[in-house]
Length: 83
Image (cartoon, rainbow, N blue to C red; front, side):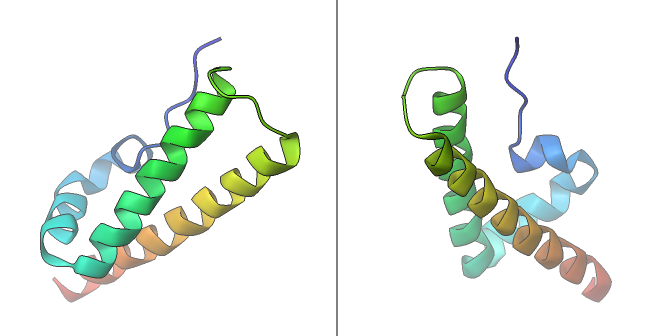
């Protein structure tokens, strides 16, 4: 079973340019983006069986990833509104 991709470019392909611009010009966005990417990578490794962990830990990581995605998406929409 293939692992679902959750990186931001897969999640929001229509905002590719905005994501790139924010990563280059907004330090807060860039930091959250990096944190999101690292969490996504860890979740993928666990789901692929590369790392074993408690289900509660995996669910906590997924919740953190979702929270970060919401924050990042809000920043993308905000940058669009002010563009």
